[in-house]
Image (tube, rainbow, N blue to C red; front, side, top):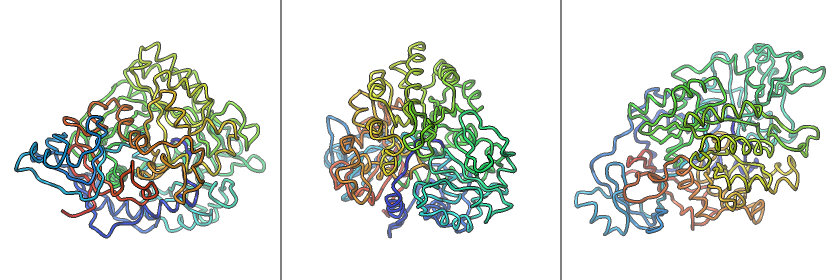
Length: 600
């Protein structure tokens, strides 16, 4: 998926604790409106990490309900509007998909009229719609139905999960899985083809690392891809090799394409089922919108159809995949604006991930002398693509993890944006902005670029990140307060499925920079923590600004879109330790309840 960081993940114990919390199904009835329950069964089974056979999901989801003419008044213990004029109220009224009024219960009932429907949310805290500013819907969907390897303690445990894979984990003959991380295993070293060959001598197996920047495959997969000791490393990729130059079964970054090019694609039914599961999961965890970071054309066409048919339950701000051949079609067609689906951005990936040492650094990795990571595009090719998409009216969003990659991105974006007159108006984004030199942090903010960062990457990576880059460079890594001080707008996300799409975990990580045990004390480089207000703004007004939607979303004000979420814990002033296990009670998009965890 690339994505980001992976760049990150949580310390093993933290990830396991968060996963357990996310798998707890409340005793109350879970109800997902606007879609079938089959998808909910699928995603809950997948989240448990089990490998039972699961039922298929309807590949033609039921239409999302249209906003009704009925006015609904929501009453809660606390409603945080992020409206400077009325920052905290006790009621809001919704009509025709918009916020009609906010204020006291009496004020709002008077504005709503005597026929208004009233929903009392009790002690919940309501916040503006939460948007994940960097995720991968197709990747999340695949992860929900293939073998989930996140949180496994050992290589042997990963192999056991593969041995009882569900039928949904197969594409043709290939067995697929994702989420392994050698940093969480006792030996801390990459696995090999030999580990898989013992269990799967004839069936091809391909397993994506948690960051999406490395692939673990067996000998049969290598054979079908034609990879031998004589195969050269592709530009921007590494084939890890053992004795005699034999491939070990680990392919990094662009080398993954050698196997992916021979992997049979998901069927139309599989593809639709995966996306349905991903969208349902998003609503369940309290997301009203997702910025999809690098959408392939097949996924875009399906979501475009669902949007026209009124079947999209969440808002999707899609970034075109600018890395593959799909970019030519996107350039030809130009930006798209639908009801719930927008595509006016492009995603480019310049380097790899820190966890697999693919992030491009100015100097050697501290724990691998002689290696400085990978640029997946040459600076010249990157600039050519940037200029082409800027000229076509696209916002440019670029994955940059290492400090060298971030320098190249800022150099190119500055030149190209000046040439196209979009330096400030284009709101071009640096996705991850993860390891940066101090001067580049200042330059990012000064240039008006947006820092799209993922808080859980910091808490995932903190056990090993400093070993990768050393004590000096780490001070410019995951540096959220430094980025804010530079003037950069922060748009917060998770990079799911690299991290889980649990936005409450993201709010917790942003506020604490700790694992769920409260370690390290004071937070990892705790001076870079965000306040509760800053964290909430990153998932609301920051994400809205990053998608040119700040006039319509990010706050709860009359006339703005009625996108909001009811939580069991106040994410700003409530006890921060309660956030990882908190409950999403209601998710509302355009005035429609797309998920609720209670019966009316």
